[in-house]
Length: 121
Image (cartoon, one colour):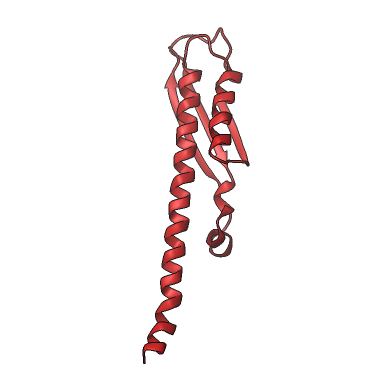
């Protein structure tokens, strides 16, 4: 009797365990993107900062967090003459979300996106 119960419940238990690991991985990835966009927007909203400086900061964080397949966009394009009060938006798209074992089997490929907006000082 115990063997039958184990045979029925073990696959379900394994599925729940791996699903929780996948969910935790997705939360970690999303948080990493949020941190990167926040830091990029903080640099981009600083007086005298440029688009390249903000991109470099975002890329630094993404690299430290292990992201490999990302797209960084900053709007509007920044230079040292961008006026104070301009709303700056930093966005990052990552297709690293499909890196998990279960997500490859059960879920279609998806892209995670995070964006942060700040007013230029």
